[in-house]
Image: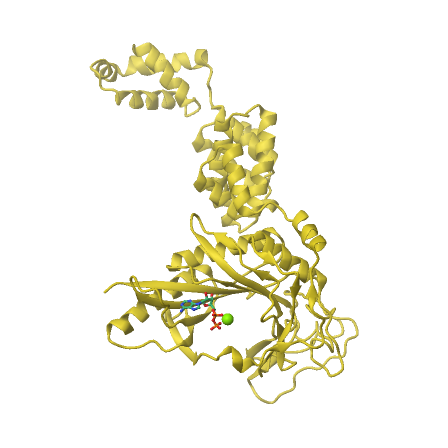
Length: 504
Ligand code: ADP
Ligand code: MG
């Protein structure tokens, strides 16, 4: 019996606004001290009132537009009631029946994944299971002006502590239709959506920091069946690779249960990377357990056509558009375009370098393709070694374009280019200076090369004879001999051309 997997995603991402969702406490994911960015509103003190953050709403509209979703003219905040120590108010302000965004699609390389909704809510605080209470303290006076210090003075060696810096940070939740069939599709969706969030500047969307969180709902059904199977929700996934692995693991686990005559009971499981398995957490709560009701302290949210158009006008070029443009404008192949566009800083660098190529009169598509090739191979490798972004290497786009021009015009060999680029990364020096210093200029002048060619031919009569008998491979050997004569500083294409002329 063969089974088909059905998967739907719920993705949370913290929006990178200046302040929190309903108050003016700072939204600073890099804050090291606990409980600094808090105020009576996000701490849920009685008598305080929330005010919605306009910047967060604009980012939501842009996310919706980027996905081709419909922006609701009328939407509403609701209270989702539950108790947990990281939730100061005893409820989370979220959106239930009237999300800001409905519908939309995201293309993951040929397959369209439909979006159900994207809504806006607030994040919770963070529980810290600390074994070292000495680290848990308010900043001292020196560190933070004159704020009153209250060091933890517990006698216990360990405790669970709460940091509310994150409580009330704007959080978007995207829910897809159950359109995925494999773990790989899930990974691709996560990567593409992260890229969109970063491109429009809505979120840093760092999975490791918890700024973006993926939950996968996984079920399986018999091939040909139209009714959905019982789903298992998988949480605790902190990379896209883990998402792929967790989904694939879960598909296999469910299949084994059904094949053994068992039954799937709806539950939440967590991905345990050490065990490389999903593990049971709890049986699933129903939405009616949360007693959703409209948030009485906030007016309904009305979004005008003008606001939508304004948000649309300030949308940057999206990854899918950029891929299409790079392919058309520069004639580089799909795979390289994928690598370039995946990294916004690298794509910008590429475009700057291409415009610099023109200054070197290397305007042909072949020059641009060569540049894209070097950028996505040698350059990217060196970049990863120093874990830097393309935006802040010592190699300027001008210098990089100059190097590519030398390779393209045969002025240096590709082997030499490797060592020159390495030197450029280390010192920021200009390529011509390095090539000059290391004596790597390659001779392309036919008159200059003729004597090396003659010498190689007269020293290798057997090879010449074999070539005459029709053994074409001998040409490569002779090129090698000339290169040796020229101590590597000859252009192999020109050498091959001269050899052929002389041999015929
Ligand atoms: P819940 O109320 O349990 O959160 P939802 O209906 O809101 O469930 O769906 C949550 C996510 O799970 C969505 O992405 C949806 O596409 C997906 N989903 C719903 N039912 C299934 C199923 N049987 N198998 C796989 N995914 C499902
Ligand atoms: Mg749900």
